[in-house]
Length: 227
Ligand code: ADP
Ligand code: MG
Image (cartoon, rainbow, N blue to C red; front, side):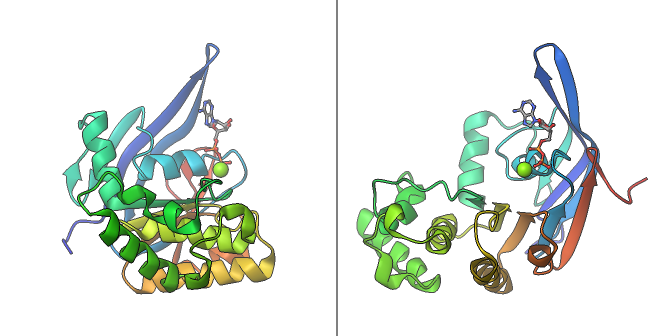
């Protein structure tokens, strides 16, 4: 663990050019995500939460501003280098699970490892371990359509964990789940965080946000409370 924060954004702006009408969605974001944080990104619909999460997760680039990962400016890296870095460092979970419907839970989980150095046998063993960790050892051979929403989100979490990410980004991970299942998923995320993985989660639900140890409130593309 280094002294630098895992992620530091400085004066990040994001502008979308749509049909000649540019919208400035992020308007000067400064923030640090420390190693081991569990951060909730909150704010009204359209305030830029997903946009900010995508930038934090290196899925998208800011229009301007600086992004440092572990003290290193990554803004100038080319797309291939950046996506390699992203795949090794980050895991992602989305509201609608984003699983591949026609392969098993096990195969969904080992997918992010297919381009890495591990053999299929090593990957399979690892995927089984992680499925056990998320409580799905007995569902490895089920396809997503044969699983409940909560179970599908556990598979997505297991997939996000495959490459042992430093940080998991979750965009409304309980948005499609009932309150009991939501709590189970949040307890699992909290446990993963307690075991050392940084978590950044978008949510507009206060009960979900309560699992995080800190909150960032976005309003009109700025962090509320910032000058
Ligand atoms: P939130 O997740 O807080 O609901 P988003 O980050 O998804 O907000 O969106 C913020 C604003 O940016 C919205 O007004 C949305 O329409 C706009 N937006 C998001 N993605 C794009 C895009 N790819 N192209 C153009 N506008 C976009
Ligand atoms: Mg969103």
